[in-house]
Length: 338
Image (cartoon, rainbow, N blue to C red; front, top):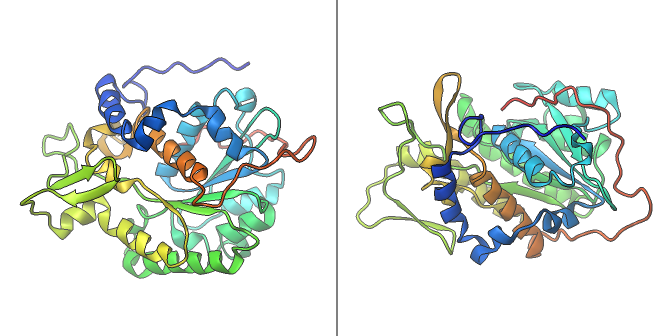
């Protein structure tokens, strides 16, 4: 068996220190009435057997994927990182996405029923559908044509990269609408699509050595709601910077098409201390979240969405020897950069 990598809290990129862990664990107590603390990999794996969980998005999605690798390590087959398909042309077609390469890879699950978790880097909603620069017209139809089965689950997130684009306002909401229409048109054949909100991005404090608190907001832990604190003055610029505006657009757009949306923004507004910190390009990172902490809350939210039945995604019954098994070709993107 491959030797496990050694991590030191707060000294490896993406790992929380003790103070960060204590803060986020305190928040996690409110998830499912404390159910997040009782979540076992066995609980989640039963929903992954016989299918692929496709994680589609940007660096936040990569962090979720890394956290799932850790959470599922006892089920991770030989700790090998595999290509998303044995079809080289299809993998290369993903790689040729416009704006940013569509890096992809998977981990396969050992045990009866198999299953796997795969990630595809697709940083813009405009890459997913109605794009003549992508084979089959977009990442979603390409995955369905060359990679996926109808049992699979697609978990999608995008917005951070849209805010970097000069035409973001003209592209972001129409992209959500196009994906919603695509989902509705294909829902009977491909029913399992979920979105998850983009977590809060905090500003770097003027001192340059910490992330600045988002004053004026109060998170109601046990209802998941976010409200303005009494007498608070919060301007649109603050809501824009945190990511509240685009998440609101996402929520309003996707609700028209009955696409489930997993929470993230509300719970992270008050967790400015849970970011990675200064590790990327010599800048203090107040965009990404460290682990264990917020990414593990995302795993709980995913499991909870499966368990409570509102997504319509159910554990599959075993369907014979070899079901859910995939051939592993070693991935060329094993060192997936955030």
